[in-house]
Length: 78
Image (tube, rainbow, N blue to C red; front, side):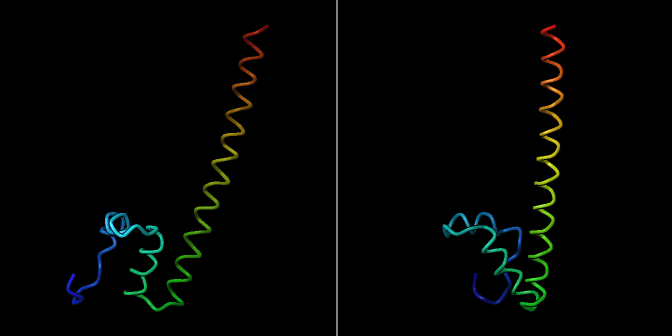
């Protein structure tokens, strides 16, 4: 990189691994190249909210799966 171009987002993972830093930290810095800090923070908050919602819905799905498996085990043992 000569400093004349922005770092493309698609290079974030290999560059972060090579530098030994978190990929999210690097992506945040990359986004700051393109957008003002206020907008990057809003984007980051939206991404975090989405991820937490996905995790919560995934956990609920796991609970449902566990109940179904337990129900099947009970039915088989009878």
